[in-house]
Length: 151
Image (cartoon, rainbow, N blue to C red):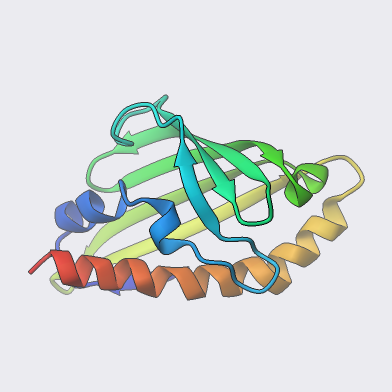
């Protein structure tokens, strides 16, 4: 998934990276909203920092930063899924890339889900049917936040 943000990679990275997910990740079809962030360690800007996302379906997931290369890339891993995803998903990995393009920033967001044994087809179906559209729904709001704050 990608979008163009109306700011430099440094500005875009500085705005998008530390956002509160509960402000930008709404419920979308079967994907629950992020409703709270708990136990965040640090400012969400260094490898090893973690936080728990509380989801609207009563579930949760832990995010841990695995790589931070300001202002071009950050990667986090999602573990300890609780709720519906906890039955299906062992862990996931998200990567955000920020590259200058025509005096703006091309933001690329990818996700890889690792299913629990015997659940790969179900997870693949959910990702194909719902996760891609979810990302297309979320990313414009983050770009709008960059537009609003980068003035």
